[in-house]
Length: 319
Image (tube, rainbow, N blue to C red; front, side, top):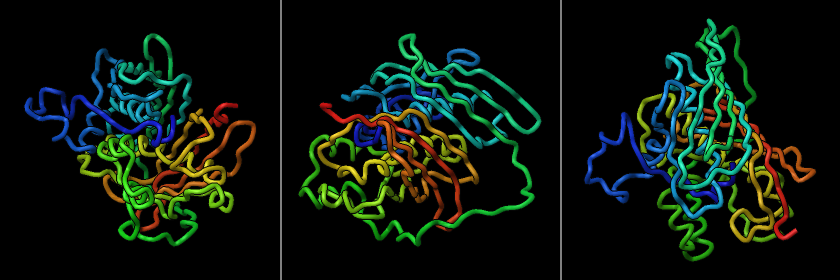
């Protein structure tokens, strides 16, 4: 997994039940970023427990990690009866994925119990394992009790904040060509709660925290698994920002190479990823070339939907 600034989300391929369902005359320009995201998460089943996912051929160093995690979770979900939603996932990123090369997802049906279903997924590219994920699905139950900590702050509403692309345009006068291409293909509307910092002096005064409002830029349909996998995709886009914020501006020359090492998520309540959600992120520690980030995802009513933890590798460029 890497920051979305390095790996712009992009997709192509089949939607719904397959590529034959898409009109032949549809051009890439006519397909919305949200539709491309749904396409990207729609895997081809090539055996009972084996699926193949597209990997967009972009000019990138490695495949966006949120894509791999989202596709792996789709593969796991396709081997269940669909009645049990995902309640948690734990993943390790072992090797960088190669853009443009399909990824094969092999699913092991670890357990089908009365209340829980467990699946283990291995992602393979050119014969090498690049990613492992374990996902657990839980039969919904009546809650014996409920509680949650409230959001740490009263955050501004998303409509009052600029889209991240508009904020960059405002600062730079125009988006650089690469960022302009990214913005056109971006499947999520991202709005930072705090205005972006552009100088090292500004970053020195910052706490290791970041919060963003996000939602898909278009409808994602009504399949709960698609929404869960889309949120898994989105969860990797800004989480490591919290580690970087006290060190360097998020959008500018970078002093560090970074890559995600592992990723864990717990899903607490149903949600729709095409509706606004608040992603509140913090980094409790960075040491030994690694930084830990925690995220809490809330809906507009302040209900905690998802908890996220990720550790990333940070190495100084040219060091």
